[in-house]
Image 1 (cartoon, rainbow, N blue to C red):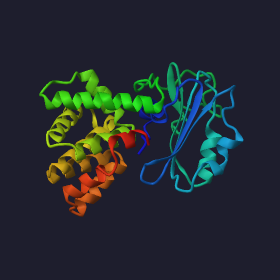
Image 2: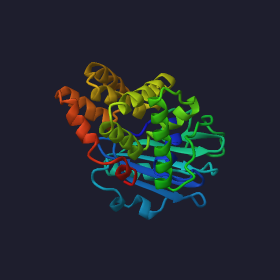
Image 3: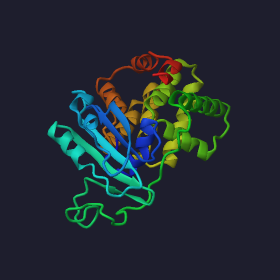
Image 4: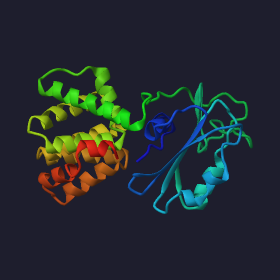
Amino acid sequence: MFPSDPRAAIARMPYLLDAEPRETLMVAGFDADGALRHRGSFRIEGHRPLDEPLLDSSMWTDDVVYTAAIAYSGIARLDLRPLIDAWGYRGRTTLTAAWAGPAGWRSYLCTSGDCCTHGEHPYASAPPAHGPYEPLHDRSQPCITWRRSRWNDWSSAISASTEGMAVEPLHLEMLARSLHDIPIRDAVLAHSASSDERIRPALQQLLMTMSMRSTLGSAVPAFTCLAAMHYLAGDTQESSRLVRRILAVEEYSLARLLHNGLDMRAPASLLARSFAHFTPQELLAA
């Protein structure tokens, strides 16, 4: 599920949509399982970023349950409330609605009168209510190029780990962040499910090191992949423990899938076949 915490959402949205966070309104819609069903990036011109096509319900499929919108702009008086109202009228739940500027951010969903809103005119010439956010790494290349580059990074790291070589902390951090991109995450799992027996322990060691260096809230995909590795290795007790921790923080769809498999005592071979249904190259091109 996309984070409802504004600071995490602001950092992750450009990464998810592969868009430049400059004078851009980014919107996303998710189904009940947290899968991305709708995405859009719109250039902001003047003080009114909203237009009829953006509010048009035909843009939003019936399976969209959760929505998110973030305006990345130096214009402090942008107002996303018409968009939030339109989503609410059509039965959608807004996870995040925020403005992110060069000096900080504000939430349109903040309920504290002395925090983000000021009387009838929120955001009117007031300084940002919250400080800077920590963005994910930029995506300067087109999406498929970026994914292939990250996949090469993963292949190199897995090979190094197989040979007992340490992977640099900054490299590990970059790999962990790349797992927020679902095709990258699934390509890693597909590779582990279809490769020889040396690959899975090496990948498990990489993910364990990532989990020790990260908080769960910012690295749910890495923790979930680690839970999948334990499942594939036959350690259902550790896998179940990790999955429970993950679901207590975020309703992440892959963690829910693992939870259901563990509940039904599905064999690891069935899980492996589901991951290996596609090749990593097919997943990267999805």
